[in-house]
Length: 311
Image 1 (tube, rainbow, N blue to C red):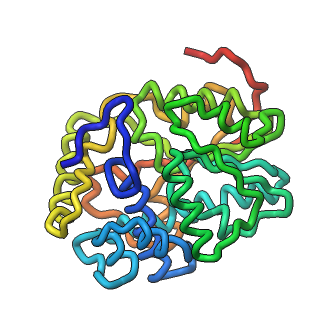
Image 2: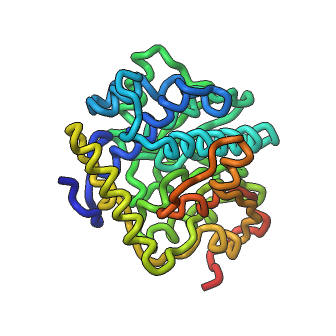
Image 3: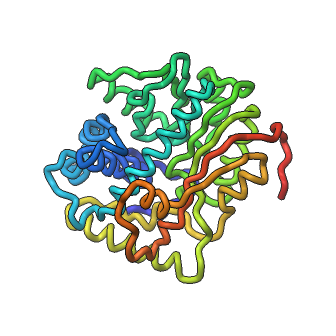
């Protein structure tokens, strides 16, 4: 069984929270195979195969059809989420931002598959074993980055800003930051520290993209845990046991969008529900996890950086 998250816990791409990166890549592989109009990630499938979780491999390669193992809503979310961040980065870099930071990069392959403008430097931040695995696997596939890819192999709970600077990051230059699928796996205070650090390291004109989830209403978290337990039970029958409810941190936290706005970021947001409608995807049904209310937010830093923020 997966143990409950705690400070200092460890994982790899086949276990605990690390397995979520592999699950997300499997969803991207399924989505890519089904319809390349919103997502085209040719590296998702081979990366999942290399991780070696049997069920995820069979899903990613199409040997096993998703059916009840992966509900269509998760595939559709993979489509709109990937497209959202792809467009965010291309909009930022085509507008002249040359420095990109992908936090908790996992099995993200944007440094290899996006048509980055000449001169773009892409920094990937993740645990050393994750960075090493992806770098080695993609090299073995003959893949080459389409930008100047640099890595900061460090746990986000450690001194990642120093590792980022050591890799060449320049806080005096505007940066495009992403924290994709990350905040819910951080304790509330760690989330705030991360967003504060992004702000502290950002020159005016920097951009950020992340998710902002509304705080739960009474009973919401029980429904979410129940839904996640049901999903895990289906996967457990195929000898894969992520125990997804134990991977997240529940409870009240600052919503990311207003928190960043208070720190000088001018943000726009769009809900998953509206992204589905905008891309002609089926509407959400039985949304007991309130996934439709999740906002994807992006925007620019308009206020000069400061070491003090509103409470």
